[in-house]
Image (cartoon, rainbow, N blue to C red; front, side, top):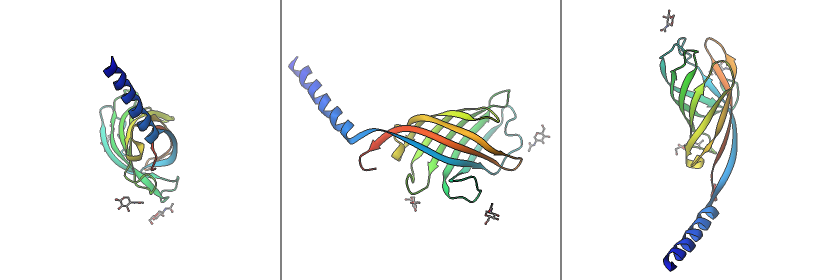
Length: 158
Ligand SMILES: *[C@@H]1O[C@H](CO)[C@@H](O)[C@H](O)[C@H]1NC(C)=O
Ligand SMILES: *[C@@H]1O[C@H](CO)[C@@H](O)[C@H](O)[C@H]1NC(C)=O
Ligand SMILES: *[C@@H]1O[C@H](CO)[C@@H](O)[C@H](O)[C@H]1NC(C)=O
């Protein structure tokens, strides 16, 4: 009994200390996902594409680089929808080296909502969602505006 009580007290102290160190923080990110080597048959059922594309601050093809999207997409829907498995690797000053793992279904030609299933670095323990709105859909260039909402550990030193 005594030992179970002292374990509870110890656990409470540890919990208090860890909550004091780290608390959930909400971050909203907005940037543009530029796909430059558009492959004509990317949505043919069964096609798998590996990609490494730019995340930029703006719509302009030369606007500041924020990071890269590295991952795999597969045309898994007979309606042309894709399954995407992406790591967003940040290279800007604020989040340099941190990543977000974004996974989910991507229907064509509409706003794509996907879960954020985790993260590393400043985005440890991330949960959230991302909305990707197509803004340029041409034969040679695709650009999506992304709004990403994540809840993650907010370390005191950040
Ligand atoms: C894309 O698909 C079309 C129609 O099936 C085909 O004619 C063309 O060769 C394919 N292109 C590539 C790069 O595989
Ligand atoms: C982006 O930079 C490249 C290389 O400097 C240049 O050729 C291109 O015209 C620029 N694009 C725009 C929209 O300014
Ligand atoms: C990001 O980190 C790398 C490796 O530590 C460093 O070389 C680079 O200059 C950093 N970039 C920025 C924008 O801080």
